[in-house]
Length: 304
Image (cartoon, rainbow, N blue to C red; front, top):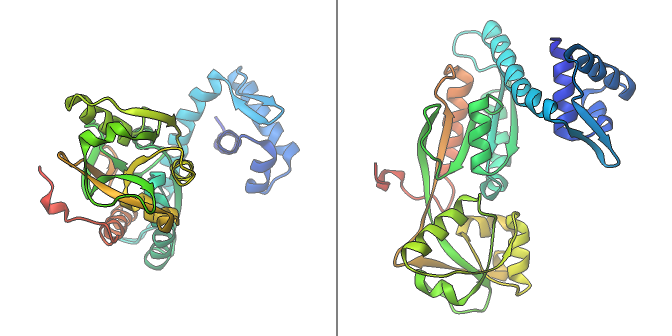
């Protein structure tokens, strides 16, 4: 299999567009199409379906995409290790960030990376914690931040930040801590069930015999906060998510107590991945940035 053709296919699949991928790869769209068709001919499979809005992966395309992203990452690592001098970080590393904290970390992470590792390259992807965990195990992502990750044999996990979940409401409402049992009186705007905050909240509500009034399900934190500001309900998020939204003046947060609901952020990497200078230094940089956030709590106080 031609690695260049595989790289072209991955770009088209990620961007869902031949024209966008051609711009990123700096090649003619016709040449890009020929290369992808040649790959489909070699594999005797249709990988992409053209639609009015771009392209979509077929079932065969999804299987190749899962393998291909990991293959290209391994090739990149191999090239980096072959050309690296002792203890000098080179090559490319991909970091996965949840949207709730990505806005706070992306700029300082890139700034710190450029200063400390000028010969290396950094790619950042955003996704839900469950998706980032899958990307790490498949090799698509090297290092990621995850909320409440489940123990997996292929992941090495380290807790780096603990925050309490809060009831988020429009500014001007009553302030101060609020008991978990009191949440039942508020219409809530929550992310989908796959989101770790939703799972944590529903588990604790069930244990407390509390029935939640879920008015709206919205996956985007920014959209959730828009709905809260517009008076369509209340949210359950961390104070840092509100601070990062840029709308803190329009919102107020009330820590949930009795019991408090800790949101634990962990740093995860593949347990099968070789620890290179690039991985080690990026891990240290990311840990330092998380623990320097205003809302960071002492991880030494976390159990276990």
